[in-house]
Amino acid sequence: MLKLYCTLSAALATATIFLVIGFLVQASWPLVQSQGFTFLFETEWYPYEALYGMLPAVIGTLWSVSLALLIAVPLGFSAALFSAELLSEPARQFVRFGMELLAGIPSVVYGLIGLWVLLPIIEVQFDLLSGRSLLAAGLLLALMILPTIMLLSEDAIYSVSKAQKEAATNLGLDWSERLLRIMIPESWPYVRTATLLAMGRAMGETIAVMLVVGSIDRIPEPWYNLLEPAQTLTSRLGREMAEAGVDSIHWSALMACGLLLALFAMAVAVISLRPTTPTEALKKP
Amino acid sequence: MKFLLAILLLISSFNLPAASDRISIVGSTTVLPIMAQAAKRYRHLHPDIILTVSGGGSGVGVASIRQGTAQIGMVSRELTEQEKNSFNNSVETIPIARDVVAIAVSKTVYLSGIKQLSIEQIADIYRGKRRNWKSVGGADTPILVIDKEASRGTRHVFAKVVLGHAQARARGASIITGSNNEEQAAIARSDQAIGMLSTAWLNDQVRALAIIGANHEPGSLTHITDSHYPIQRTLDILLPKNASDKTRKFIDFLLSPEGQKIVQNVGYLPIH
Image 1: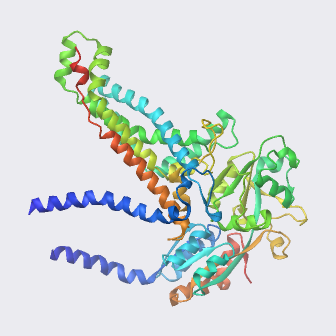
Image 2: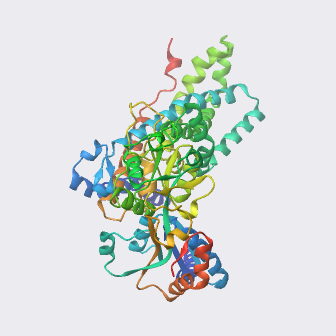
Image 3: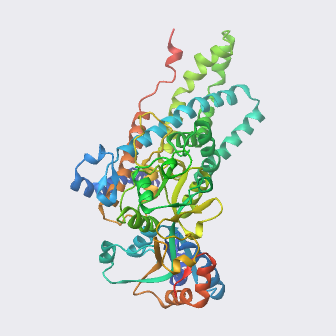
């Protein structure tokens, strides 16, 4: 009985992902039928003139997520090292508690903070017309994924076995050597997983990004100019989902945006499945 | 199993009577203040009826009525031919108030001397042909052109009058906002912004421009009545023809003297 229940649950859980992808593919098919795959490489999005170019939003999504990771990963990892290695147990619990609180704050709150605190700072610092930009989105996302990266990395570093730590100390390694030779290589696979999880969250985050990114379909000029307003896939979905008539091409195009997001997330998951060998560094002579 | 069934029954018994008395109102954020106030008052008069009011924009109002997810839709623009066809005469449009779409600028811009613009100048700004306030007589600073989501009623009305057709594109736009609140905040926070706003959202930080040719200061309600301000509109509700009596009674309330008083109180003009 229990076995059957578990089997059914597993089947259902596995089927869900295929159902979701299947639904998205089916829903975005009308767009492909009417316009082929050119929408992937076109830059104009204006549903009222049947223009569904997704390139600006894809670029905006990739930029904001990369920026967020670039900022949050080193920061989160260093904070994790500090907390796991240098803090006393009560202090460590306190820091963790703070991070857990940070992770639990609803994203719209981050959005409002971004709107009222981050945007004016960016406007003044870079002398911009409007602070709404990829930079604002990236910074806000970095703040949002920081707790994920920090907490998971901290767990990993903290749980590197005591025996290994002691062995390292007994072998005469100092703190920095121990860190570089043991703690980091040992915890690295978990940090990578944390990063990928955080990346998933950053990519799917909607409301906070929508409030600060500018929501305009434009590829930055030049392409690396992060101070320009831009569009992300989620910001577009957030702004347009409710108005698009079900079964219209517009609806279908939005579903295609959703499919793209899902595919990105899957690509990330596949990368994270790569076999890991945590003790490789230790095996080296 | 019986336990589960009992819970299911319990939940459904809570929901069923409530659902029939629930009136959900969705759409234009321009109409939203009227509905929010009216619903508050109406709840007070009829505690048995549950009214929920939420925004989203005129486009969302139309879509919600089409999909049957709301009982009343709020729209602040005329329906497009396509939308009319899709309803196939099963929905009526009832005007409940009047309003203008003001061309709004930041206080700083207003105080720097930009107090009026012509339709052509505004169109040039939105098309990206004029990018500096200096070119229309202001300070030497770039213009932050704020556009709205294409589905918004305010944008339809604005684009129709200024850019020529309701869905015209504004290539000069720098950023896109959604609700009146979001647009108002974006204009208020910038020293260089221009945007479009319903009169009810004008304040000290966000000032309306006069439109040359009309020879009137806009924003004041008297100029809407004598039709001098060029970007006018009625604020409507969409009501399916098979709406319940309870829903219709609420509409009657909106059109009653008390309802129209609310319209005036939130900053619009009564329909009669």
